[in-house]
Amino acid sequence: MSFTLDRIENKIEFFEAYDLKTLEAKIDAKIENNKALLLDVFSICHQVVFDPNAGKMLYSAVVHFKVKN
Image 1 (cartoon, rainbow, N blue to C red):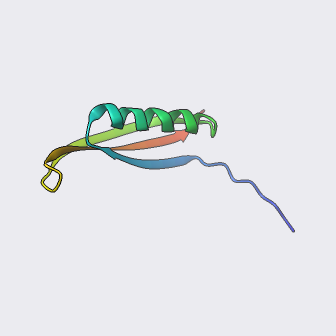
Image 2: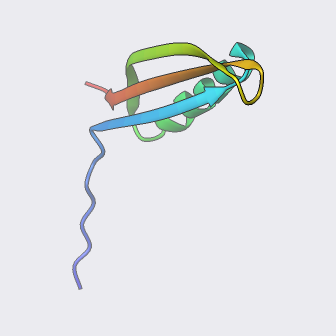
């Protein structure tokens, strides 16, 4: 039986929330978790749209993590 470990070099995660404070908290928590995997934030893209079902603004973000050099 062989056991191999592969290092994660790229990771993309998606987040959404109905307020910026919650979205920021979710992203900050994931950044701290990914530090254990030796991943840093490479880029962040975000947008906001109106959710007619909830009657609120929906904030979303995509965070690209890359391995530390």
